[in-house]
Image (cartoon, rainbow, N blue to C red; front, side, top):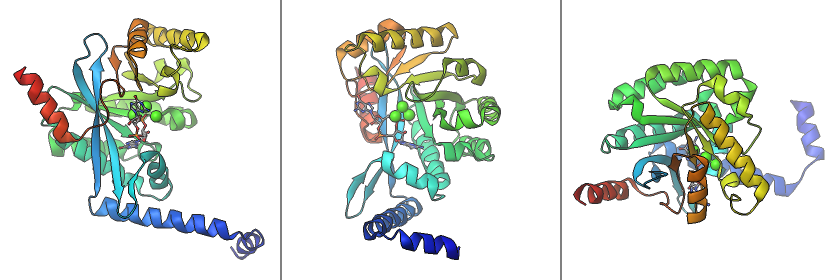
Length: 274
Ligand code: C2E
Ligand code: CA
Ligand code: CA
Ligand code: CA
């Protein structure tokens, strides 16, 4: 430790200290936010590709950091991962989403699971616990996982997915096409759904090669009987194309930004009385 300290001394850079200080402050504030229940969830609409009817929502965590304003989950989720906070953050998100979903019997609710949660051998136990505690119908919950962890631990991933499916929840592969995923993975893991990453969907009407790749990807997933969601739909053109390729579910600003739970409830009330 002494030697490491000396090595660090020789690389001394005051701006690095400032960075670390900021990060530590952020981590501390995040810890406090989790403990005092200051995180909230936003819910983004998922719609049927054919009718554009609301079929579900994806829960997305939100943090309004005191004195700083909203912080992107793209920034604080990785910090939660490396500082041991992801467990309690993830538990909060899952419990809150399941509790809230009870008011929306007609909707499916997707919840993001980060690798740090999924890696925990007790993860399935706490999913079971939350399902029981909130008395939510398991089949209405979809857990979205990304491929990073999967590739490192295919064996354990397969087991975890199997156990989760045994509880009755659905498991989706998130951000498909953004990383190293190979279509070969899809069959062996038993995913109930894949979500095509926004970075791919964006170029669908601009780049011929990307269009063909996307089309082939959706076709392959469908040949394995796995339904496909396209995320990040911002234009009519993208919605039409992704539907044409065979996506059954669409998500994106075109259909709705992430909204408060109250707003989703109002939307459902309007639909019920329409
Ligand atoms: P994600 O799971 O891929 O979620 C979709 C992200 O894309 C959300 O950003 C959403 O607001 C954004 N988005 C949706 N439609 C559009 C669109 O049409 N255009 C554009 N430009 N963006 C769109 P958000 O909420 O900032 O979340 C970013 C990422 O942070 C998520 O990506 C997910 O990886 C992570 N995340 C968010 N909430 C949670 C959570 O509760 N738990 C975990 N583990 N991760 C979360
Ligand atoms: Ca997601
Ligand atoms: Ca995604
Ligand atoms: Ca993403």
